[in-house]
Amino acid sequence: MEIKDFSQAMALQKELSAKLVSNVDKLRSQKAASVAATIKEQERLIAQAKVEVATSKKEKELAIKRWDTRVQQRKATVQRLEKGLKEMKKRVAEQEKAVKKTAPTPKKPAPKPKKVVATKKKLETKPKVKATATKKKR
Image (cartoon, rainbow, N blue to C red; front, top):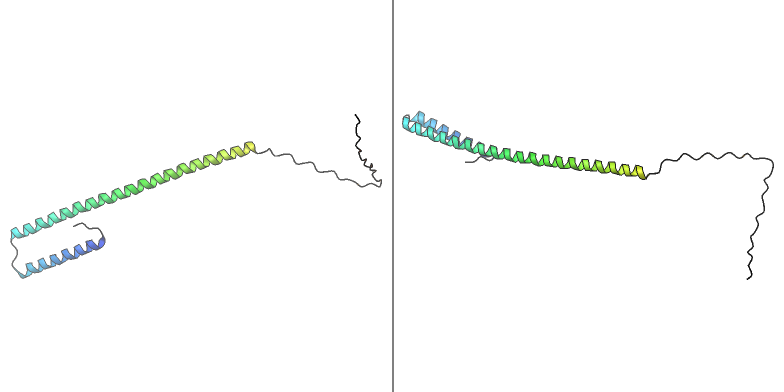
């Protein structure tokens, strides 16, 4: 019998306990069983225990395989993510280099305009001359 979960183990334990109690009650109430019968019963119990041990080993191996598979999958995921992170960092570094090459160098700030001091003299302005177009004769 394969035990898959705790409830099955508990059911088996109850069943075996009931058998044990009934065997003990029989021994108390009746004659002792013959040595040959007792030996056969013990051999049967040992065979059953060996089967249960073998089944437990198989279940353990399956569980270990599942966990190994999970660990391998997670390692692969970590490696994939680390590779992606390295590529991103590389691209960012390349973009920053490209920006530095194409970015204009910072210019010196423009000189501050000189303050104009108002004087009492009025500035003379020249009258604007309208340009007249003259036609050339041929």
